[in-house]
Length: 487
Image 1 (cartoon, rainbow, N blue to C red):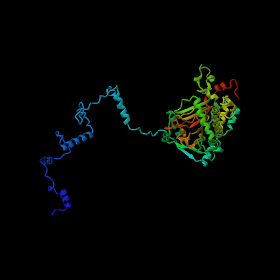
Image 2: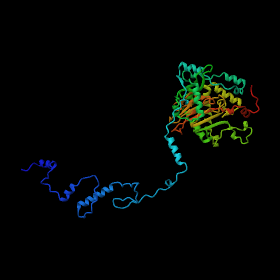
Image 3: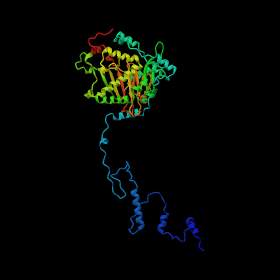
Image 4: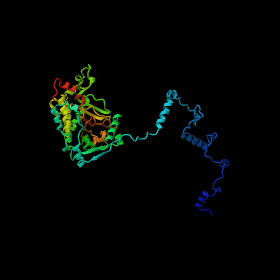
């Protein structure tokens, strides 16, 4: 009887003996099967007659594999005129390179490259232990007893006696009656930063001035600066017999006077004034980032063509590149009102410094921006800025005069900071704006930080300034010629 089909299938798979149903292999196939198998590519066989279908299929397969494989790269040791492709053709060599490949090595080029390689591979310098860092400070919260006591005791640095001699006796008496700070307005609302390490702060400020540092936020954080955004009074710790010395006063947008000055309409006028100044006024050249635009009077020897009587001829107004500003009533109104707001905030919160600016304006006879509104404006000069950043510096302001600055930000809240170097503090303008700050810029190192990645930000500033060249005897002779000095 014949076995079942399943057994036949099992036998065909597992049994090594030939099946009676399978024909015996031919002698040629048996000889080929007896050869050892390897992974090498089968050597080309001699051409077969076209009528051999199996040989034709094998030739087609070899051709397909040859076309699918990438061309072998010629070895550098055995270069030839070309590479043979599967069809037996010789591929042409690429044309030889020209230009840099054929240029000879210049003198000392290898030595310079070796030196550069060594410097690039050198480890970073070890941090200097004596490198100045931000000084130690103590922050007294707003409303605390310590903060209110320091506000009452704090005093601005006094103007030199030689400067005060330019005022009349009545002016000196009036100045002596003014308080240094608006204590009632600051009590309970103003935090106090007390610089404990005064010498360390002075060393940091001197280092930044000597190196003409132009830091950004990251550099200040690496130095240990403290970042603040609320109303703050910065003072040096009182070391007997020294008094509590004010370094800066910062007011944020929550301060009622600041909010009233720069409400929605006031901020619009602020932006409008600076935008128009960009069209009309020649920009100052001392900015690291952004630009400044000044209105008012100045002293500059370069504008004295005859190099004679510098006390008279070198005083002039700032240059305008477009005379259309004279017919732009909106621009002139915005500039005058902007300067009034900055001067008024100064008069309210630092009465003695605000009064001193006004007294010297009258004593020198300085020309205000608006003669009809001179009672409202104490500063002879307004400095407007946009996207501004600068190196750490002290200003050429008159001795111990205030520099008062107001800021408004653009539509986006980009990083934007102002630092007081000797205190190691940075004020976050982008969080506090509209905001206001005043400091004695001729003796306090400060800077507006660069803003990497936001170099063209639309935030703006405006500062009331009195330059030291405007409170001299020469200036008095220029603006009040022949008038005797009041005693």
